[in-house]
Length: 383
Image 1 (cartoon, helix red, strand yellow):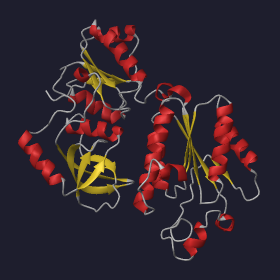
Image 2 (cartoon, one colour; image 1 turned 180 degrees about the vertical axis):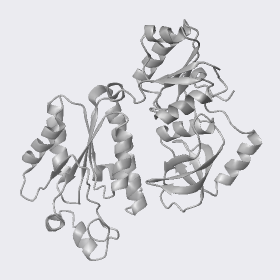
Image 3 (cartoon, rainbow, N blue to C red; image 1 turned 60 degrees about the vertical axis):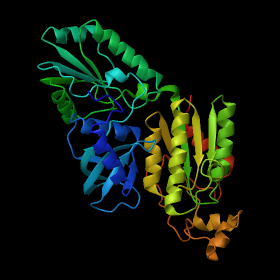
Image 4 (cartoon, rainbow, N blue to C red; image 1 turned 90 degrees about the vertical axis):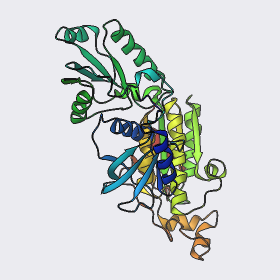
């Protein structure tokens, strides 16, 4: 039986594949993508597997799929590109490690032939489960998410265990946050069930977004007023009793992203790091206020995806025009860029992708900071 972290191939094959992977481009999977890969490798979800496209992706290449710690999980032969990502067949190596409830992350070798599969996040009412059992055996396939530090996850597992143990119902945790109707059928079949009862398929937002955490993500050109608005917003929210973390672009580069340059790849890495920290703050009920330039839509979307696993992500576009930002030029950056001393400078020699999905747009050309903060607070409507 292959439990989380176990090899899915022989140690000799794993060593050979790991050596091969050293020469391949690597793709670090999010916890969500690693969970879905786990189900694909176990045969509980069908191939091909889809993943985000890595920077510098070359069509038809083989990718080394790794977890957040760099552990090699699988090799993926890319067969096609999809919107925002790649698709391909995987050569399994090992399951992602899970430190929690290890005995419950069972592979499809745990089968319940002829049973009905109860596929859900939250446990059903006891009477409803008893009604199902009156018609025959059942197996509980729990969409248990991907965050082992979420206290609600452990509370749900305890509730499922109490419900199923006394009824002799096998309990299996799946590293998924949601499943489509088609995927529910695949999961039920993989565990030997003849049919599935899947309700709810989507995680309850009240459970996923506990603590009312929120990330306010400002984006805009250098000199647009992002930092000024963000700093006053942080003060206003702290005055209101909220726990606030301010992730200003320059401060982050001094500490969190020290050593990164300003190439496109390094700027994307910087924003992903900000997104990771903001997600952690949001998960624990705090307010993360981010104020980087964040010129690329895809990288902003990646940060948003990280945060929205736990709470709200509110994108604010500080839409002050380039000519106004350049006239301010408090740091002399625009002058240096115009003189050719700074390469890949946003707005001059590198593009800024205007967000089309911002919750609010503010222009500080003639708007004072108090007014701008008032608009943001109105949009947030935090209790």
